[in-house]
Length: 468
Ligand code: AMP
Ligand code: ZN
Image 1 (cartoon, helix red, strand yellow):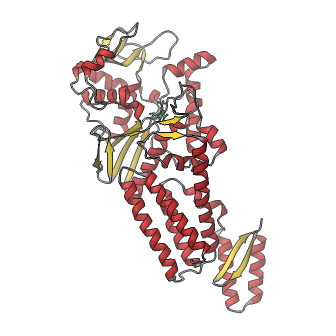
Image 2 (cartoon, helix red, strand yellow):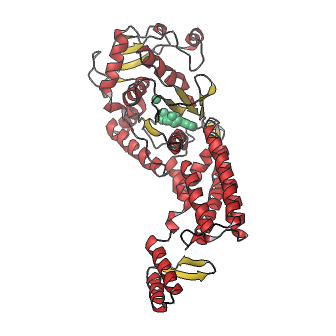
Image 3 (cartoon, protein in one colour):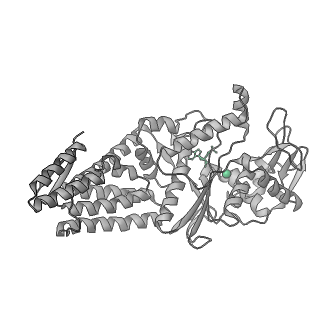
């Protein structure tokens, strides 16, 4: 697989650090509000990347943090007369609930910043000991000048950055570029004990501490939205590498999701929450709308886009329904016809193109186009009566495996699945008929009806239809 690395700004061959184990860290949300659909993009990208690596036979550890201590959380708590912890818990729970509705599963570890204070303190203490950080009043800052590679991710010159930077009133830092690792407690704010007095961690150091704790130095992939390249990821690299820990081997940044041509962010105000979208649309439509653009491209999000994708996804669902109907009662081990084989060959060619697209920097847009393309071909074959029951069953199995990688499993429509025991009774009934045991075959027909299904005899087998 080739993966684009924002550090080297080119696609490189991806080979994991540890044999068949892929290690990934993605920056998750700061939980002071319901997450907007833009926040769902890195989540979807990371979960689909995980599925893709798993489909290649890798084992994946995906860590996605939740920032549960931040000025905005504290301010919201103060404004509402609530403890900041209550605010953080409410929105962290809501984040997990909303993203779970997408049906993509969960990251393997979802660490909270407040549960890693000791690791954060240890990392800062090491930086202070090595002369890469200094205490100034109640705060501790990273000394940008002490580390020669600052700016290597965002491709900026330190001298130019310094020119544009400013020192906020109340900050005691020596250089405008220096950034806080530890913030001394202000009255009424949550605080933890540390060698530098009571305080709380800065945002950047949380991600260094948690990624290194769960994945170790030199882990494979660090992701997040491209809005985080500077300063967040630049600072994560500086802190981690100055502390002697080589950091991520690949930087995977998703483009921004824009709404009405404006960048979506919680502070701008043009917010569409993930939950409000999922209340109105099927999750598969949202996933397909995301995957229809390459993850690195900006995504212009609109109601029209969502409706258009919902129609494509519905057509795909109908193809699965058609295949299920055609496949009902397919005799086990039945031979495929030449026409079946022709459809399966088309599917195999599409599958190869699908794999090649994903192997090329996770090009889900091209992969999805192959899925919709094969859906059209299968639909035409169904309409022309070219697929036998066994052929339909084979196509269905194959196609179900393909769409799993993209997280579109729900489209295969298990809710309309005929229960296995009903299929078994229908099989038994056919055998009874073949043996001219009509009493038994009638009894089975009644039992199937009792279960809410009707079995109909068709030329090459039978068809089961749900009656209630
Ligand atoms: P935040 O809570 O703003 O720190 O964002 C959580 C994650 O969502 C980070 O990986 C951000 O880079 C990403 N993100 C935030 N806004 C957008 C957006 N409009 N489009 C895509 N990703 C975003
Ligand atoms: Zn982060």
